[in-house]
Length: 256
Image (cartoon, rainbow, N blue to C red; front, side):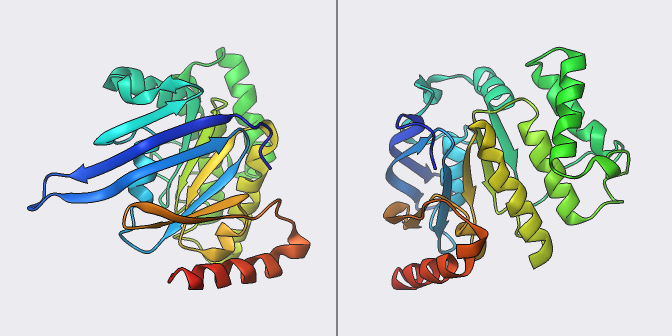
């Protein structure tokens, strides 16, 4: 559960409208949301409900049409592109459905490149940090392999290592298990659940109730609005089946 009662990430009256269509397409319609230190927040909803758009807007990958987003009290919507890029590099981590690794680098160097670019510590300390993360997430033995020589689950664990290399305040994940089979999904979710040990908050978009059941709290979007939320408490393996069944029942009531 969250380690603090103070939000580390907050958005107020957030809207997003795409004006490239005729007529313009409203996607987010006034969202208020807070994420606590160390919280695992899950965002769900039907296709087109605004899940990924919300993730992109609160992480600074896209700019909202109106409203505000703050990280540790700093207004992100007031930053220029260069300032926002630096925040993403040093205070945020990202995991996507696809890994987006460079094919000419091995697994270790792909992780290390981002960490060195962030420059949050010296070179030797950065290397130690990366090696510790690879060991923590069980990919040290494939660290010198090419990115086409490892499994999808290992690549996603490498993505988690890369995302954590600069000690981010918050980690964003957009369908991180969408391209994985059930066994690989489980190992990636195990790794993500371990992320919060250091106090990092996690915001994850998913369509998979099994993955969503790992979160502390689930919010449900419809037509760009949060229509309901459910607090789940701390996940344990012993309660996994019951927890997923209860979440599925809640989702069905919402029309998922």
